[in-house]
Amino acid sequence: MHEVVKFNAGDRTFTAPVPSERKQAFFELNNFGLIMPDRYRGAWPKDLQFVGLLKLSVSSVLTLVNFSDQQTIQRLHQLESALQEKNIHHIIVDAHDAETFFTAARLLLETTKPSYLHCSSGANRTGIVTMITSLMQQQLDGKIVDENVVTELLSEAISYGFDFDKPDRKKDMEDVLVLAIISNLIR
Image (cartoon, rainbow, N blue to C red; front, side, top):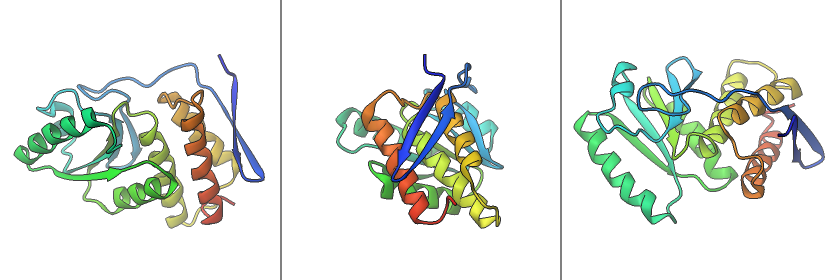
């Protein structure tokens, strides 16, 4: 078990402690959590009746997918139909690199509230977009994001199961951190 994880972002290194607890489920929503008021995050809804989403009065869902995965595409069609039946607005983003993660975060901030962000597990793509969304909102609120804030956000992503042990996932996070620095989201 890792006690601290290091993320390299160009000439900067961010470290994050590994929390001992994983996040819990809310109805059919694994890895459920609150990003900010009226913005929720988690895993792909297991129950297409959307008991949890309806209890939250969610009006829009942002789904992060990898269009190269055929199984996900099939599940996506089922999800789309079920959301339409419930009159829940659905946005789909092919999230596969730093720029598309940033696009998803902008869409989440702009979409109708309350909203729900998810990928398959609610851990990797969702964790990255959650972090970017938090950075963008803090900038909109006029707050300065320093290393301490980034450490908290990285640790939170890990607590939701972010796979920092997988080189491709860790590289995705590091690429996002570089873009966040370049975009002046991190000082």
